[in-house]
Image (tube, rainbow over all chains, first blue to last red):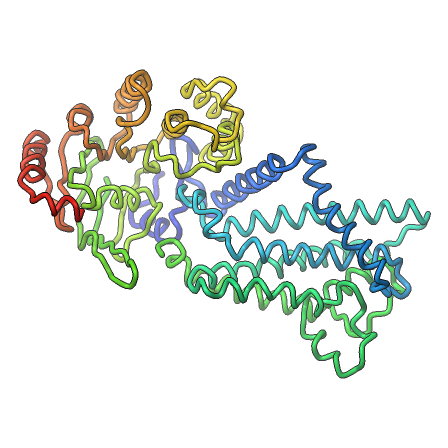
Length: 283
Length: 229
């Protein structure tokens, strides 16, 4: 039975998530349409990446892997790692990969509206869908990279470092969700206030140091602690390191704080987005 | 039925507000196709974009129980670095069941007749090739109402003839909202007409009368008015 016209009007106002009865053969719910859109966007994102590099999907995987290896060689060379009881390669890989997931999502979200203008040609596609798809792609791709590095390291040192595999993947998820939340807020702000873009680009660069990517923050004097412990990315990265080795000493890392911060950021970003979606589509 | 209530749309450019139309209200019954006439800049394409959900109005509502296409033939929705096949697959994954995606892609491939170019990046296509893929993609999906914006002017003679045939066939099961400066095409497909002029809409039940009024206004308008538009 067809829904009444008034209901359809509400559907349109809620984002126009309706599809062809003859092609979809049935009216889909908003969630089902969004699932289709995100699925299509993930396909497009991966195809775009594959068309940009040689070697197919392996090439796509090698690109961030190469970036991570260059960073690690550089940081080992300057003796910046100081990983304590954790293998230095795993220590750096954890910090670089989790922070890169966050920064890639944020950086790509800042110009997302301009970059994805063509996609908004299709009514079911909304700006938030492009960030969701990007989060899935970046999160999945870099998770694969971290697993490849971990396995390669375990083989090289003939010892498996994995204390809590659940925490390992959960912290990866938290890094992606924090990136999604900040990316969504930055996309909205950058579109409404274009001058914000330049400021926004500096945020991940500053956070790179404040997240303890190449070092453990508590090797610095105690008075510097306040600059680090407010940052949920620091907690997420430190917890990921601890998930690999239970002896890894990280005095302030707190899972409850990381989860609570993520939930607050996610709620705030969705509230900002839904209150400005109309402006994003009309400005 | 498509019911449009008090639709208002304006644009801002360098802080100056330009109202395209104000408080437009009209109904389109199931089974009728409408020609939208008006001078350049009158807001015809903007109205189609709003009806297609690409753009949003400042105020007003659109109530409908029908599925409406995106503006047919517009090439704006394609990613240049992806091939024609990949672009078509992307759109098909949104609008069709997953199992029907290969069928949709095959339809567009056969309609566009691009041969090996279908697997080359969209940005390498000529404007004619782009039009073929865009039009074929629009026709790959069964919508209740098609929004058709100047599509009969695109492509070479053979493509235009083929497009006309497909449109004629599609007309048997769907309705059209058409914008076209080719008045012959409008007469072929449409039952009645709207004239958009000065931000207001006038409805004509007789298409020939609407075309005559529109032509008369265009010819009698001062030259500088056209330049402004």
